[in-house]
Length: 123
Image (cartoon, rainbow, N blue to C red):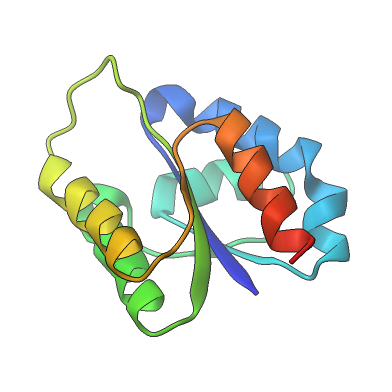
């Protein structure tokens, strides 16, 4: 199973912390991680194994959306920063729409991500 992780700049450290906290769960469930470029780089720098696509503004959100449409990605953890502006907001909205269209769980904060992860693991 593969999940996608994305984090706005102000949330990247929080995403890496979340992944490290849940590493044993991810490993025991054989969950692969795909990440947008910069988020993936932060995760890799922390010693995590992730597949990296382009950064969000360069098309990474669209690449992840394509993997959702293809049935590859089964969950998205997108830690959004609601207090900052994002120039690629249309890409973000597209990704969220694709999650809704394909009934893919989308967590936008650590509390929801933890619940989604537990649901995916114990399905």
